[in-house]
Amino acid sequence: MKIKSIISSFMAICILSFTIQPLQATENTSSVTTTTATDSTKEKTPTIAAESAILIDANSKTVLYEKNGYNKQYPASITKLMTALLAIENLNPNDTITFSHDAIFSIERGSSHIGLDVGEQITVDQALHGLLLMSANEVANGLAEAVSGSIENFANCMTLRAKELGAKNTNFANPHGLHDPNHYTTAYDMALIGSYLAYNDYFLDIMKDTTYQIPPTNLVNEIRYLYQQHSMVNPTKNPIYYRKDVIGGKTGFTDEAHHTLVTMARRGDTTLVAVVLKSKKATLYTDTAALLDYGFDSYDILPLHKTTDMLATLPLYSVKSGKNYQAGNCSIGLAEDSNVLVHKSVTASDITTKLRLPEYITLGNQIGDEVGEITYLYGSEILCVQKLIITDIAFSPSPFTTETPTSGSILSNIWYIALGILTLFCLILFILWLNKKYLKRKKPRIFDK
Image 1 (cartoon, rainbow, N blue to C red):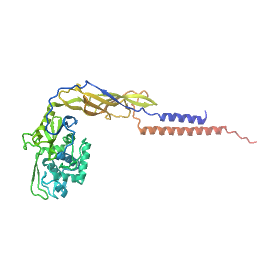
Image 2 (image 1 turned 120 degrees about the horizontal axis):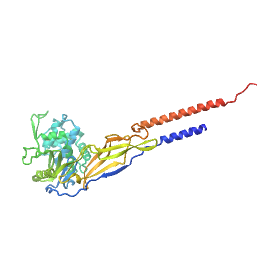
Image 3 (image 1 turned 90 degrees about the vertical axis):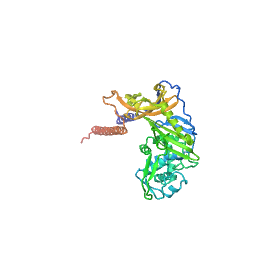
Image 4 (image 1 turned 180 degrees about the horizontal axis):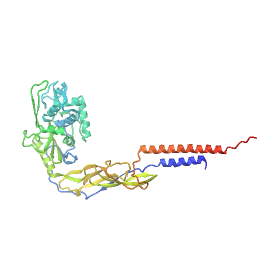
């Protein structure tokens, strides 16, 4: 065989080996279905006097009741919930705020305040108590400047943060809620903001302080006494409306917005958020109480799956010597327990589940990797969506070696290619050496005459 033929054949074999690629998975939707949901007789929903109202589960964001819940309304001072959220996320409670001329004098005369003066200093913690308990407008301005440098910049940040939380029909023009035609929200959007704060420990700690004192400052020698304005949180303000299950909230009022109210309540593992917009003063708390009673009396948490449950099994594929083979099986389950808030008449057999998973898993994935999601539905209503992960991998005996299959990483592929090139180079050198030696032997002898 000629030298060129040997080299060409060897290189062809090497190129063929190095260009074999592993099989790529394509996404496929599969489903596991139980009994289809049926209509159940439910308790009579509450009659709400306010123009807009909504009740949601703070955990899943499921809407339990709504009346014009997606209509745009003016929020008034419930705006300060978003102001508080940004302040909590961006400032240290012990930081000091110095109040500017604009912070003090840009608010309407006679609107809610705690009597701060230009140049006066209080801590962020004291400011948040003044904001949330007494609805102080100059405090809202001072916090805005401390976070973003200006009231205008802060308003932009408020709107962006609201959209991140899912409040897409909200636009904030200021941090306090005094009337502005371009300052609006919806009951649903405010419920989303409230549901986020319902799990913020610092916010809830402030809500526990139904009374609070700001000691003398650099400009004022007197103690400022604050008290909670939300009647359902403060047992002394109006005992008729006080509720032990209410953990927080915020009141609001302007002539244009009328009365507004956000209320968070918790019983056991269930947390609800009720929002009432454009309400009359006489029905503000009765509407809210009716919403909360309806939610707690009619709905309950239904456990569906645990993290120990295996919801699916997918084959684990690999490539060896240019052929696909099943390297094992992957157990698929939940990253966390699945619990949904549903009407008490609904049972687990009424819930429909859909799994979104690929057809198979490729070698290299590990336990804990996210591979899909499960959707829980009641009829056409999506109750919740949760992540699906690999919970276990059972490897099969390899048809090629007794070793456990390992992932074909980029580094290992590079190593094999380099090793192949080095081997080819050495073989060529060896063949050339043999050829040279052979030619020397064939060289004719020259005899002396």
